[in-house]
Image 1: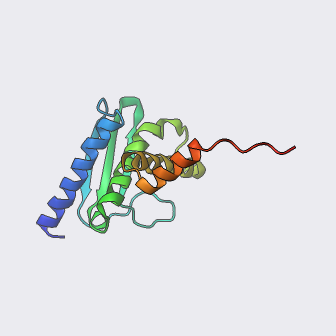
Image 2 (image 1 turned 60 degrees about the vertical axis):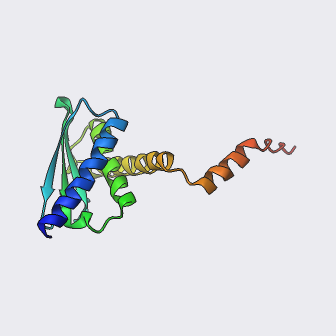
Length: 150
């Protein structure tokens, strides 16, 4: 990764993070970024594959660090990188609900992952609505309810 590529990825992430920190109301948190310029094996996912990012949260002090795997960010479209950015910031919000350590309760980690994934997708869907899908939803909501069969 050249210096120019590294800086380009860093600026993409910072711009997205700024928007989502504000949108999610996380401005009161101290959120730091760590930049792994070389390939980075995160402490998760559990199967050991490389992740684009990993968030560690110290929720009782409202502090978090997001470590970005810079070579992996280069493979992401703008939309995918935004989804990942939102997902990682959602970990900041929901991490405190996990009351066990990841190693002691791997299912809690997996539940948190799914919650962050589904919320990020829902938020991005609201930010970038698909016009065709919106038309279908409006048609469905305008249709009278089906009569119950006796």
